[in-house]
Image (cartoon, rainbow, N blue to C red):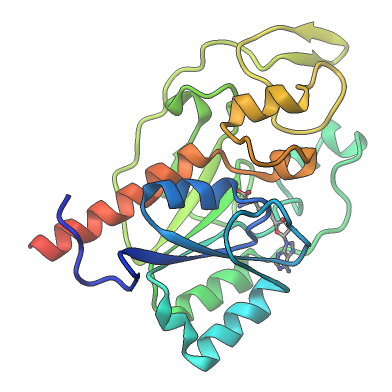
Length: 241
Ligand SMILES: C[S@@+](CC[C@H](N)C(=O)[O-])C[C@H]1O[C@@H](n2cnc3c(N)ncnc32)[C@H](O)[C@@H]1O
């Protein structure tokens, strides 16, 4: 592949800022696509395998912009907490312990990202109206054992939207008192036919954390490997033009 000439690099690899980084489901995919990744998460995340800043992501991003340090980066990914209104926090799932009062950080994250002048991605689960659905990815597109639809808003760049592919069957588990078997496991919750940690790791393609909360929060790395490769290819095309 032609190496892009117009993007900022850390050595040979472009540098990516991974906001709300958790245990690096997203980050790992970008690393596989060819980025050096730096994370930021408010929680202690010893399973995050890349350098990361522990603190509030919006304050950190504002600091990077104010100091000019943001210019080290070529690309930003943000996965603001999604528990505000996503489909897991409405209807029956709310009564099962999800939901409650959560701050919606999508709009302030986008406002700061626009100030960086950098190309970016904001990720949210299905059921959220607040982001543009420039890409929607699904585990079946990558042969995974989770369906896990995720939407991605692309800021400052575009790529082709892959077609959705039919699911092979159901998500295994109980719904309204009835057990359904199927080729996918649920990527959230526990009990009621939900997967073991080992099943969840295998289904998502994530081996470096066994913390259920980190697994259930993660994007499968296959998604961001696809997005990262698409971004680098788009820059290669621009550089070659
Ligand atoms: C949906 S998870 C991100 C998942 C991650 N992209 C992945 O694929 O593994 C959201 C993360 O945001 C973190 N978080 C919540 N509020 C935050 C804040 N104000 N600043 C930084 N991180 C925050 C949580 O600790 C959690 O790890």
